[in-house]
Image 1 (cartoon, rainbow, N blue to C red):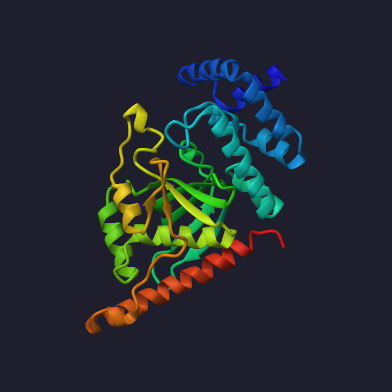
Image 2 (cartoon, helix red, strand yellow):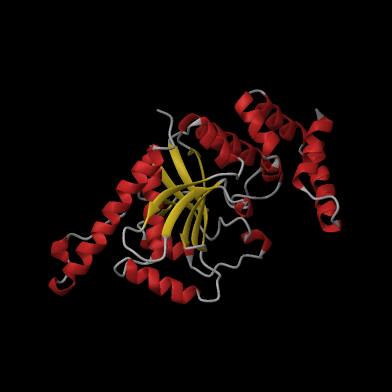
Length: 300
């Protein structure tokens, strides 16, 4: 079993490259350091045919457990429990082929598409290998082929055992014309900010999953915080608070509402009501699309 666990590293790192070979040696060292727990996690995957297929196709899950990912201060045991809970939830909720694709970073599924004409503007559910540090599943917003926003998340019970969705990080665009794209999409969303829309769709997805709680990692909880290599362009704490979030007893997490608060049309100045009605219609359509898109992925 030890040899098999170490052999997984050859599927993670390209040993022809010196830099990757150094990472492989570091992986071996971590595997020795955490051997009992890493071996138990590996055996858990092997004990079920679906989980076995996942770990054989996507060995990065063992690496994620061994490295200081997901949120600041997460222990090795917490990371193992997080991965088990997420994979178990995926296999419980989603059709087998969908769960496999999303756990192995080989599939992407539509959740939303802007109802107006123009450049295709979509939100898709996928697992991006580049987002392994903050989560195990991604809600990606795309404008044509350009990535606008990404929500890196994982699934599982919270400290009270309630089914929850956790946002590990939100990543914005890094294209040369990012501001132009954001202005264009904000205009198409009737002055509703694009980053608010990806959060709104994430809330709708959490509800479709049957989550009872929605959490987001705070700046203090950001996994890279302790290493001082964080480069966040958005004040996430202020964003979570603006969305109705409140800091939990664990300052590394905010709890967010599952339903975004919305003004009544009577509260809106009369000259803006037409624009707000169009915005509300867009959001109602997003709720319906996400519910339908997620349901198509779930077990019947």
